[in-house]
Length: 203
Image (tube, rainbow, N blue to C red; front, side):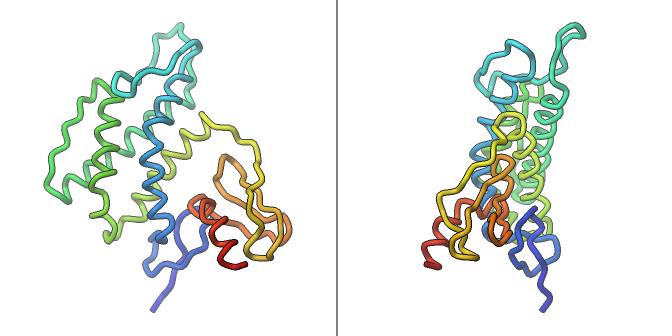
């Protein structure tokens, strides 16, 4: 039987289908879905100078009038995140026969409804051939918002490296990946929360 590597960045776990994701990365998409609404609100507050955070369901993302300065990068990240959850919520509705009611004129409300639908019912996508695309797309939407709202400072993890039993492990690029400074072992985003546990099990 052929074996393939999980398609998620920096993850080296073995999977049985080309383009699939490992169990850890599949589980991590729950974290992304939980955090996406807050990231959306925080990114929107940074869209134009002087903006303030507001309730997700009241947000409407649109290009400001010409004289108003705004961040095109954040705008693209917000639009991209909305398109991602809307696309996959639509796929989910096709699979389950549900109906998706999204009021496109209130972007935040539509975003919230799509994320809620995915959180509640996306388990039915687990065995589909395109599940890797789903998890990867959520990850990209999540990372694009994280890069606009979070610190990129390198931080030292509290665990020792489970590969060489003692190396210092650093998380980089807002937890995009972790690396051991001694042996060079790397872990993907979904594996960082497991490092403490794996270290204790190896010890």
